[in-house]
Length: 201
Image (cartoon, rainbow, N blue to C red):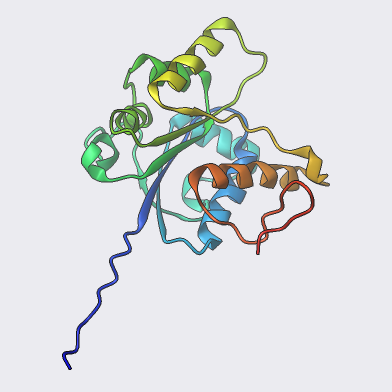
């Protein structure tokens, strides 16, 4: 009988996180902690704009490198970084939160920084791009840009918590949105609560 070695061919999934200067940083830590604690083997890389750094500090008193799960950060102006190329092999990109300026750049196919370029790469490679657009009220330009980005292949995913689960704190409300985000990315989350009182094992 011949012994054969079976190699583990499971490939680690690569997720890119873009952080821009919109309000809504509250959603970032629970989302990244959720990825860090899930059973899936996911490599998370990040890009944070200058205004993103400022808003993150203002709202959470955190620096990007203090966020959980992100193994590597790229400079916002480094167009030679891996996310600039379709050969980098990212499976999905989430921009959380996404400013209207970033939305406009992505909808128009403009690459003013690495986040915009990486998003354009995801679209051209037919990979998943999720835009957590954050603004209110919305003018016609905002709505047109959302539709244009949607038609290019992006998923418009505003950070809107689900209140039917009766969250008692802002953090619990943010968690309900993160669960929906995980669903969209195909990430299984333990103890994820659903409508009707069901809880994932």
